Image 1 (cartoon, rainbow over the protein chains, first blue to last red):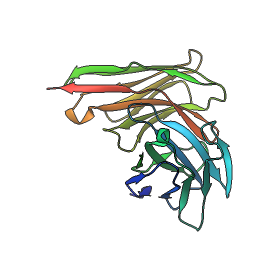
Image 2: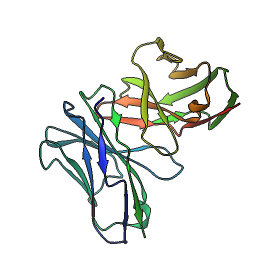
Image 3: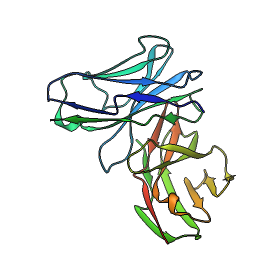
Length: 113
Length: 108
């Protein structure tokens, strides 16, 4: 069964550094998403992406964040100048269509020290 | 904005039935989804209701009443492996808005 994959599984970085989280969505899916989950809290929407453009973004997704589809398979989330409060689990998801089920990857645990 | 309310915890014994209620206030509502999450792992899609009524998928069923802004997930014949967090999520254009989750603990 096709699945969303994410790398790395765990990333440790120092405050102020830049990180890039990588995702490979399911191959025939056209809509891509990033969510985050701070430990013990709910899953929060960050951004959705379709046709090489951001479709929607939350107020969390400020100028510190950016997304890119650098090639036909990868979808990345870049966090510039990381802060302690960026420590969370970051989930990538994809769907065939905007209103179809979203399938989540295993997540990248980001720890900012 | 959006708000979703669901109970924080439920405990039941193996073989029992558990119902997790979810009430929501939101704009741009297309439907209600349910996800399962084990110990911070990937949220796994369980069920989706776009229209009023009951959807059954094996041991799990989900119900929606759009007029009452209410839905529930029904877990039947509980098994130990069902111990997890369950999230209701409102489906909008281009995103899901999640509730805080219900931790289900299944006891032998």
